[in-house]
Amino acid sequence: MTQLAHTSLIASAMVVLLACAPARAASDAIEMTVTSRVITHFRIGTNQERFGPLEFAGGLEMNGSSRHFGAISGLQLFDDQSRFLAVADTGFFVTGRIERDDDHHPTGLSSVVMRHMGAATNEKWKTDAEGLTVRGDIAHVSFEREHRISDYRLSGDDAPVLLRTAPPPVPMRELRANRGFETVSVAPAASPLADALVGITEMSLDANRNIMAFVRKPDGKSFQFSVRRSDEFDITDGDFLPDGDMILLERRFNITDGVAMRLRRIRSGDIVEGATVDGEVLLEADLFYQIDNMEGLSITVDPDGTPRLTIISDDNHSLLQRNLLLEFRLVGEDG
Image 1 (cartoon, rainbow, N blue to C red):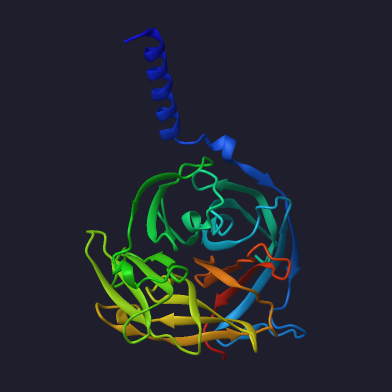
Image 2: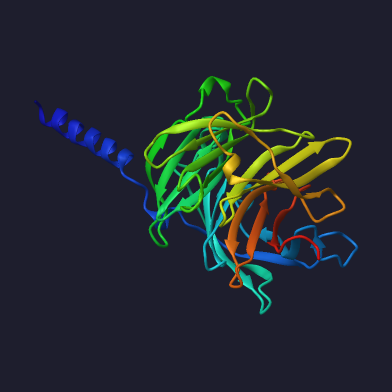
């Protein structure tokens, strides 16, 4: 081997090693300031606080100093109800904190950082992150278009590290390109589904035109079920209550009525192999309410034991849409 050939071989090897090496978190971090307008009332023009079993607990309209801020499609709020992890369907992780007043209403975001989920790319079909849930130090992220579920290890303030990727356990040929798995969530240990990962599509339909879904148990075994589709609503996210029931966040859009949001409660015992599940509608809201393209849902528990639903919108980086964060407490039926 000539010296030139030897040098060329070493250079080629270094290129391969560099291509395979994970990106350094510091170089990927995009820090920004987020300014917020506090939303004090959910129904426009009224002082109404109760909406069936839900109590409005505040909201924000947000704008970031970086052009990358927005397009948020999945949200995980941690137990302190301050720290959050989110994903944007443009291929970013988002971290930060929700600031709160003495009554626990959200007042703004701080320490907001966005990081690419992988190599920066303009090919949206490769980075269309939609669903997010966290179990321990593992974040499960669902992607559509290039349908997959990826697991990332969380490590403090560093960028999440990709561990593995696998196809969802459903017939891949049945998944619509832009209507894949918007929801991934882990069932509580004490529920009938016991730590299983549950995934639900936005609008990939089974033979009966209901929404396809799966359960993947901790031992790797899985089964399919369906969620009944009604009133043209599509599913954009879901999370579990402490008792094991699941709350689904749904969206409808048409030219006549504009955008609408719905919350539906699915009983945990109904989710079994081959079932088509349905549930109680907790809330339905249209443009008379402070909503937009609501896409992310995370459920935590207040100090008094009341479940808190935190919902976030995807503005699609459109001047006609807003980045909203809304919160509700599940206090029960009106007395």
